[in-house]
Length: 93
Image (cartoon, rainbow, N blue to C red):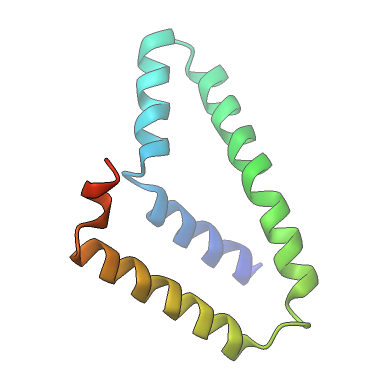
């Protein structure tokens, strides 16, 4: 139960101000159908996230945590360097 509460809180904090949340607010305002928009966006997030959670659970004991940390660090470092070099502007992002 503790893992559920912690992950719920962390995801909720991370999602505040995310483009997905802004789009949800815009859709709810445009269509004036709050319940339908909330249910639709929640279902969409579940469709996107459930496979990742299942894959992570199944592979957690097969992949060394140090390797996962190293790959994540390399990816973040690469993105940071790309941002510093302005690669996004060159790609029109």
